[in-house]
Length: 412
Image (cartoon, rainbow, N blue to C red; front, top):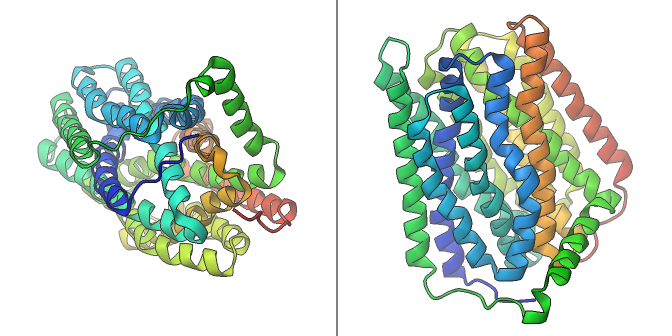
């Protein structure tokens, strides 16, 4: 296997690329996407499905993308993902109905499906015994793109629509900005990573049989290891609540509480802001004091504010609850990927991170769909039961993790 390790300057370049790519993706997603689907006549279940469908792409393609990075090199795979960030958003400009929106969202999901596992594998490979801290720093820097993207989307939609109902052209303008940011990420990567292509694997390791064996090895290392599976499940279940909040906090804020789209975007933005600043600190604690206690209590820090959100319509209270949820997310995500890496061998990092990504994408995709179904089942207006049941799932996952993961992590 190719053991090329990226330099510090390469990693710094990836920070800038990641910031632009994530800003593009966040602008396309929250709160604009849910409101776009609603403007096209979608009900709660359909809105949840539209938000979730891009994550479904990751469920099916993150594992193959991780294997691909082990075979053709991480840089080549990285550029494939960035090309999707740059080109697919142009298709939003042709969307005029719900079905078209769902198709484009599915295609847009290839961006993070390909890019995500490669970046995680690169960071883990250079982090040494500071895996959680470096993963957290990298994640925080790129998440700043999310911090900007969500409020920017709400601000643009509010400014374009004024006091009236958003029109199709308003959404098309916003997705034009999404395409521009995605193209910028590709251009920066082309300049910063020029001449840094890794050599592919030897020819005898690029056969179909060898590739399938690598794929099987990576999958088995995750799915047949109870510790890894339960740890990955923590990230997956936490992402279930993130996906539900991403889809229905804007709807709750705008349609139930009467706030503007910009205010809805700010609710998501404050959650991201808190996550960004908390994550490196939590990662450092995880490296020094252990990952398991943080993971366990972090799930409660997510579950409690999540369950409380639909009980309040005061904007200040909602900001506080979103912020506390952000702390919980930082605690869980700073330790989960690092603990999985502790349990995995170096030779399968790309495949293992791809498989790990698939598991948390299952949670992220399930969240909007499950929340939409529960809201519709309860009459279409009651968010409380839906959020409460999802919070119970978080608590149960935390208890299963505490009982099932007793062993100390394996050494690197």
